[in-house]
Length: 429
Image 1 (cartoon, rainbow, N blue to C red):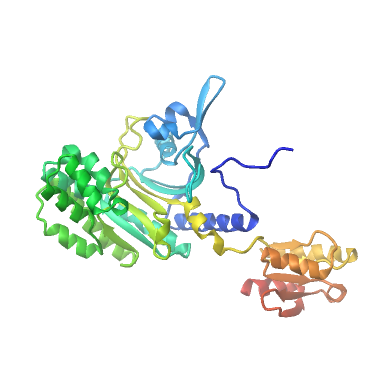
Image 2: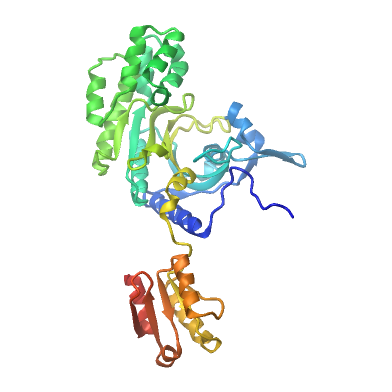
């Protein structure tokens, strides 16, 4: 006998989990469309030469690659590189700016751990072919709205890469920018003393190290941070531009109704040192801060540079659905998508049961007919186990009078009514 075991890092769900997962996808999809994004799906497989044109090194090592005949193929490791290929390939057919959402799984051969998988879902939105702050704000507003639609209290941690780039340039540290930002990015986990020691080891003066650590620790509402940055009187074009973009973004967020407790300016957010060029953000949950980031994104330049002569900048955001779901899935106890289960008392009543089910389905009610003849108690236990909220009793009397007895499983209350009224009754509850 072969032991039934799936590969490590590849998730699969029990029915209750799958229902909850699918509901989250449906909510995210509906929310993205509400904000004006169009759906896109790309193949799971890309040509290896295309997929790894931009991303090499560790990312390439984490990819799943294989050869079929003379063709080298790879499973996508994110949704951004396939988007770049798609935009370059269909450039003449797309209306720019191109606003798309994509909800699909990706694969990375990294070490599995809590909240980290080798196969996982990403839920991306991007606006391609724009340079304005309005697009940045659009992404942030859609992200805040989507997290709210999921019933989650989230906080967007917002920053702008130009601010720190300008700070470093003003202190003649721009040549060490990537090295410095990589260290500052670890500030929350490693602590101030350890990061200061590392900054000194790479040649920074104590004054510069203390200054950068202080600014990187600023994490407050937009108005307070803007005032602090303005008070530095930094004379650098990048710094000035980043600060102005931050001001304009905060104005647009307020105009869109994004409340003060839904986002903060966090100058310790850096992300993608050689990728993001302007606004950057991460999303955490107020009630579950231990989960860490459940979403992120920012502005980038020249998305399609490896595939086209066209230069297209963009801005995007992504929700890591697999990680988010892993932390929240225990809240769900429903193992069936059925709103009601029809109890079957005997074979002679089966035609009436199937007729009732058919009429209710035409009224957009999800109905299951118990698939065999068992004791009523067993059928009721089945409904309880699956978390089906209602059972429909269709006995001899109900068949004769064209009625249905509706039983609410949680309260135990039941009511007999005309078949024609059942759908309306269930929809009200």
